[in-house]
Length: 331
Image: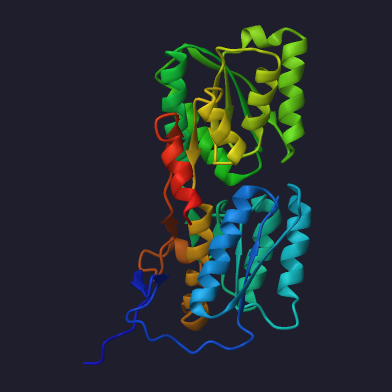
């Protein structure tokens, strides 16, 4: 009996493939994969781009990251449309969704044109995207909440910095709420939308200092990468101690503030892995697409591909920050 080919997860030559066997189709000189994101100049996305390029080199294809230098969902939509309109049809697109309401029609439209689309880092779960690759953001929120509870000793008023339209940050906030649920002494007194601009976090914290509101705040929680280094900077400049800061991601400034005991800890993601695995996934979907491509596979109990692939998350604090920096610098 002839064995039926299925799309599954496996490893071949150090690269993640969704195939039985490692034969695959020959790549063409025009085969190119794209990553569309926002704020692409920050270290987080530069790390993702490193993973993107590493995988593309190993597989023997082209890859490019594009997007606005600021957090701008409309601009992300425009970049996505430019990629889709390339003279040579994209072999596949991965996108970190700034706003699901904006990007869902783009994702569904691309898949309708036969272009595989996956989401990384931030999802659009109601879209026809084929797979989400990234952090378990709810778990990341729970991890951060556990650290905050420990540092606050179960009581205190906290400020949260976020970007509320992003699905991944909503999931992190959900994790924090559930993590605080058994600790009624901890109150979230303010939730600040930083709109992808670190200066908003700096100015808001400085305003609290100048208006003496800082005396009523015990902790600061950041659900994204750029806010907490600014918070730590303000508190350090004003010589204000005894405030708990729980960060997100591993910007070098964040790690430095952890070493200086200004930030209690941060939840580390793996953007390199997202970029690397994303190219491998798209390459397989390009050569062996599920049929039909535009089906809502996430709702099919017999789908031939995973709805979600977790890339992992971990706590980095004073106890392991040096080891973390050392392991990162060796790559």
